[in-house]
Amino acid sequence: MVEAWYMDESSEDQRAPHRLWPNRAVSLEQLRRLGVVYRKLDADNYETDPRLKEIRRAENYSWMDIITIHKDKLPNYEEKIKTFYEEHLHLDDEIRYILDGSGYFDVRDKDDKWIRISMEKGDMITLPAGIYHRFTLDENNYIKAMRLFVGEPVWTPYNRPADDFPARKAYMKFLAEEAQ
Image 1 (tube, rainbow, N blue to C red):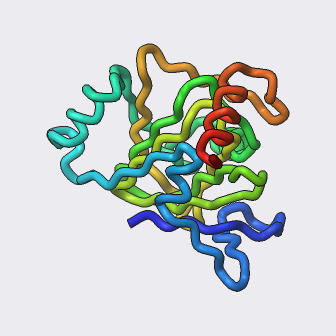
Image 2 (image 1 turned 180 degrees about the vertical axis):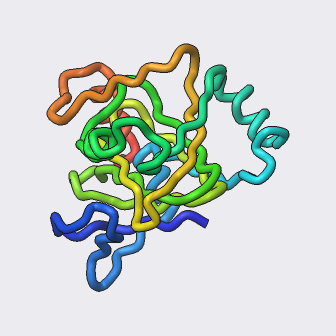
């Protein structure tokens, strides 16, 4: 099962867990209230998994690819790692399904605090359009993930500040409604 927690303010190695002391765990329900959807799937059988097929059909995830993030597998590795870790948002949902390895997705809560979500094999996450987030490998330095999209993929990250985009405004409205 996925684990999430509030992060410390340290700027040390981004791949470290960065837990507060004492730890402040974040539940799946708290993530859901931020619009983050989590699922656990069978990564060993992703090519034939009927549950993945049903999720793709129900959510209209018509396009997918697989990315391996490791220094020996990803061109411009160092540059990409820095880019992934810059705080940004997207105009569409970001859907990632971890097929092997592990890493962290960090998201901002309603009070602008960082929450770190530890992802490993079999975890699928959907980050809503307009949420500020970032990604980094953990200390294992390896992840293989399926990227899913509705329609053609759009890779554009909009670095913070990006508050004037309709996707951000819609996300902020969602958060306000969740708080009521």
